[in-house]
Length: 137
Image 1 (spheres, one colour):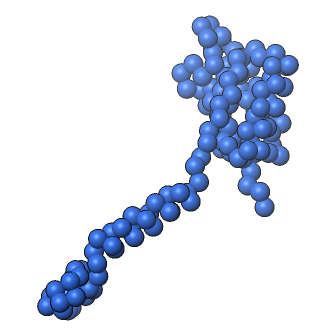
Image 2 (tube, one colour; image 1 turned 30 degrees about the vertical axis):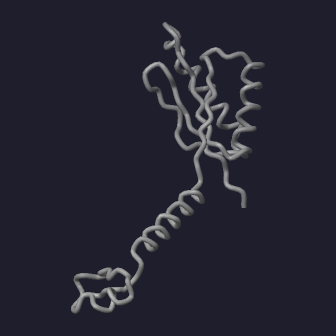
Image 3 (spheres, helix red, strand yellow; image 1 turned 90 degrees about the horizontal axis):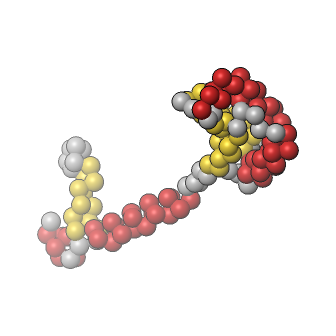
């Protein structure tokens, strides 16, 4: 304590359970500043996952399907996850098998660009499927 006061620094207890307790003489505010700086740098390096959505109807026409598939290819090439879903309006829920076929067809055609993370699953009025981009080696 006397040595820390003499140097006008702080005495910080590093490991209190050790016998005798381990302490270090440092400038505590500078230590906190550097720790925050390190955490901020780590946060900046962390990858942010972008999720792009594509919506289909149960009876989406071939031209519309191809148009949306091209967008899906672009999203996967850019490294974003893809959430493709079929939205059932009103009584169109009776065509849930057509919606599943549509999503499985999309997954099969995008096989070389991404892998299916979650198979088509019906949640309320929408059937959802997730496709993650394949990592480049």
